[in-house]
Amino acid sequence: MSMTEHEKLLAGKDYDYRDKELQQMIAKGKRLVQAINTETDQATREKDIKDLFGKVGQRLTINGTFGAVYGAHISFGDDDFINGNCYFQDSNRITFGDRVIVAPDVKFYCGEHNMDATKRFGTREDGSHYLISYTQPISIGNDVWIGGNVTIIGGVHIGNNVIIGAGAVVVKDVPDNTVVGGVPAKVIEKLPALKSEGD
Image (cartoon, rainbow, N blue to C red; front, top):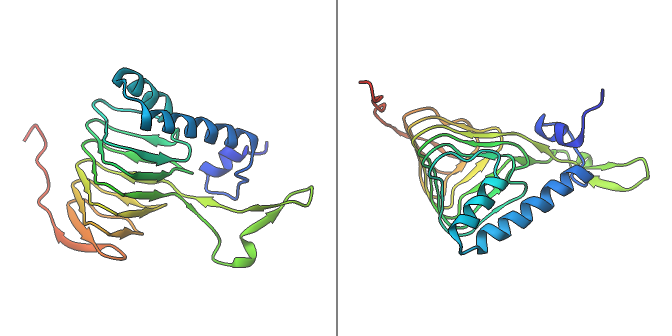
């Protein structure tokens, strides 16, 4: 049985973003993002947030405007705080743990293209061309603080109890209990592990 373009997208395979199902998802996402960014009635805004995202934990705060491609691929834990002007290029899943703080201007990029320029466009049966994209998920653990103007690339897992310094570009996994920064981001220092509530 052949995969749908959406299934290919989530599996990290070559997919056609102009597929009808994907375009309907993008249109819904665009409509809801615009509504959330302009709505002043809190109850209506909260309903739109629940309609847009794949999962919304308790007490999610989106402070200011944001951008997303699908929205449906984004899942939030409890007590997450997203500051203004963040962008989620959620062509794969972006998963947040609990108590994640995201400063302004942070970008999450799940999509990528082939390093070989001759393999960046495909040809359909009707002879038309399309951009070939591949995607990888992004996951963020609990108790993470992401500083302003950080960029996080697809395929990255950020552990628990992590601080990412402003302006960092995160291209590989970040271990638990660390502070990272720079381009590309590297471990700057270790943090003491958090005690669980039972300790």
